[in-house]
Image (cartoon, rainbow, N blue to C red; front, side):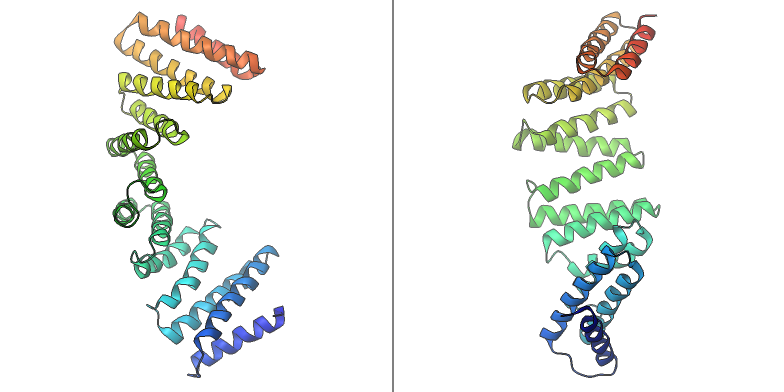
Length: 295
């Protein structure tokens, strides 16, 4: 179908819907497919206003023919939600995501989980943190029920919940979520990159909570796993610097010379990696930190 015919079909369908003329189901499905294809073309050409109008037209047709609460409204709602979400227009995306979240009602577990995650992001951006938390918790419960705790989507939602708590400064809750993920990944994939990532996030939370020894312990585990999985040297150096910082903070708090020495040892290992990699700026900064530690 040509671009002109697509636009004509859409206009005729909308007119038919508003004036009570029948639209067959297959015609409506084809209309939705055509408008989406044309909208993507408009987006690629930078014609965003026209693309948005096409998405809105398709939604209006679906609502007029089948009702605002119908399953047929889901595809155009999804298109509009994604259109605004991808352009960081979270206030507008939220309107469509809230409708989607209620319409899906966990009938499509993957779509429901994806929508819940997007809606929570919009709510957080709108400074409605309590609502964002409620949406994430509801989505996680549904994902656990429909997909299981071991499913990647459920794990991603848990990770987002922990990150949400970090962003809003609720570190006790973030700690609980990340510790749960550590247990889960240790059981399912004990040598995975995902576990390394959660170790790093949990270490940051321990740092925020001034849990010096816990931070050191988790960073030691992270480092050991990175060495075992033969991660890139630059990643090892970054973890060694974090470990040195953790030992340094603990040494200052507990007035422990042994911890100060371990901090230096971690920094020295990181410095060796930076110098071997030719990363002179990072090496110079690290040398200055080592000098302050020994002063």
